[in-house]
Length: 79
Image 1 (spheres, rainbow, N blue to C red):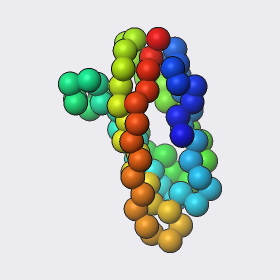
Image 2 (image 1 turned 180 degrees about the horizontal axis):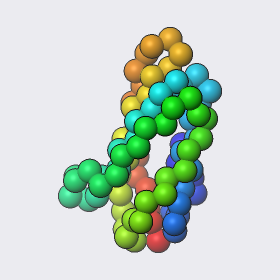
Image 3 (image 1 turned 120 degrees about the horizontal axis):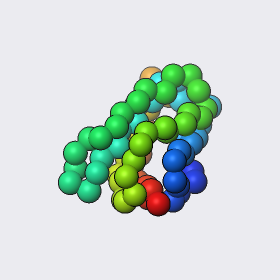
């Protein structure tokens, strides 16, 4: 879903073709939202945010072409 992981300056979010609209939120280890972006009708999008090195958590909420909501979450590491 997000690669490379770990990364230094930017990463790519790769989505299935059936996803119409997605919202990506990134949280620090304290649970504070530090970044968000909307991805429209794309299979991939870059995350370009000046993250400090550390561990972050992401939440991806997407709507597929049938209107079904899909949620995914995970951990990403910035070196």
